[in-house]
Amino acid sequence: MKQFLTTMAGVFAGLTLFLVGVPFLLVVIAAGATRPAPVPGAVVLQLDLRNALSDQDVQNPFSAFGGRSNSVMSVVQTLRQAEGDRRVKGLLVRLPEVGMEPGAADELRQALRRFEAAGKPVIAHSQGLYQSGVVSSTYMVGAAAGDLWMQPGAALQVTGLAVEDVFFKRFFDEYGVKPDFEQRKEFKNAVNGYLHSDYTAAHRTAQLSWMNSVYSSALNTAASDREMEPALLRARLEAGPYPAARALELGLIDRLGHLHEAEQTLLDAAGDDARLMELSAYARSAGPAGRSGPVIALIEAEGPITTGRSGLSNPLAPSAMIFSDDISAALYDAAEDDDIKAVVLRLNSPGGSDTASEQILAAVRAAKAAGKPVVVSMGTYGASGGYWVASEASAIIAQPTTLTGSIGVYGGKLALGPALAEFGVDMRELGVGGAFAGAYGMGDGFTPVQQAAFSAMMDNVYDEFIVRVARGRNLSPQRVDEIARGRVWTGAQAQSLGLVDELGGFYQAVDKAKTLAGLEGEVRLRRMTPQATPLQALERALGMGAVSVKTLTAAAWVLGDPRAQGILDTLATERLRAQGAAAVLAPTPIR
Image 1: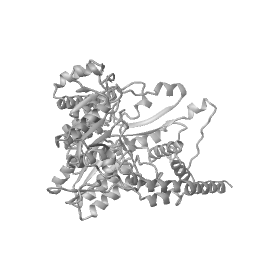
Image 2: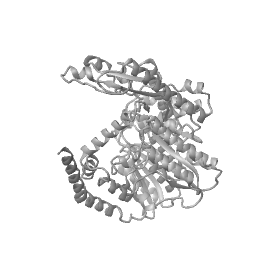
Image 3: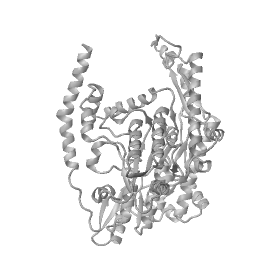
Image 4: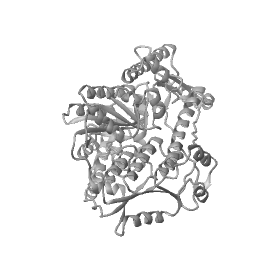
């Protein structure tokens, strides 16, 4: 009976998707397939950064019908194309009011500087910068523009960088929750909030180290772009906050003005017939660039790393995971394609499964063995499992503020049995086989035998990580252990330690790939990032091999039910945790 009801629920969900969702999707596809408006004779591009950017384009097969998504990579590549387009006369950037991810800010800043160096004016307009997250990075992006405007009456609050962590130890002690975790090693602090009530000495040292590096990098870069002494800029900012008028007097911004005035200034400079055009609309109208020259494969990977392929998750939802089957397959395809001369792997990941990371690394090795240099371009994150993937690449290019390293591992569980018992809930366990069979049960902590076995597994994962970094970076295992131990480094710090080859963004990585492959002149980037076709996505969504939760949540997603995405996010997180007790994940800071 239960099986019958489950099957009927799946059939009902499938019918719902077919009768309601599919027509809806067809309408979206038809609307998105309309021919984009042509680029006028003279345009001023508009880039709105107030909504958070992903590092890479959303891997939703239906997004292709609506053009490129608003991501760091799409912005950078579109601006690169616009540099040489005579129709494009300038750029207006709308800044967010809060902090930006540091690595993304570095990439955008470099793109703005290149655009302006091509002889095209850039105005950055702010409606206020408020002390939230890494707001110094947002200010750095604004400082990269030829003119930084601020709305009258707004505030400039760029006074420092602070993060806040939550510690649960006293709460757990009060209610009988036992956190049973192993860390390799003292700087691997992702679970410190479960184990302590305050920062450990190592945690505090590591946290302040990357914070100081990120903060100093942003201010020094902004000072250089504004042609001001770094110490003077820092002193003036930290003495704030200021109203916009005072910020202008201190030389921290260039002009007071409303958005319409900034728009009109750029339009007047562009000519009588100039029009405003959103950057995303320009990208759709201009079409792809680089149709000739040797081919370099571009493979993009963003999010936590897990085993499997994206089709096993909701096929319609945006991808926020790196699936090892997908990325490794793309690398093997690039290795076997005679037209491809090199690979740029764009990576933005705090880590994930060690086995999934190793699967991708094996494919990196295969591409190199086929004579194709593999250059890793790191975004905001290239840490832990992300660094595992990158460790044996031909070259690693990172931003000064990229968070990388975190060469370490942690794992364990929360034992909830004693806490639940206080509320009349009893957890009992039965098992057959060896002593480790019930090790991950939540009723109680590890037994001594289980603890010893689990600890040995953590040691093995850590040692294997060290071996790969030592081999890939041409360092001794002893030296790698000294700079590893789970510690997060910024790209600038990592370069001095030999973990990163060069500092720069995506196009620096492309240039490096050209050099390593012995290529000259223009090259053609071929995007080989895995993505299901719309037909494949529909087949999966309609329940090919699955008649229950997957179809139901896909239908709910199509119909706009926000609860569905919550379910999917929870399932993805739990899946990552359940893939084994070892996780090579780095902590991620706030924006």
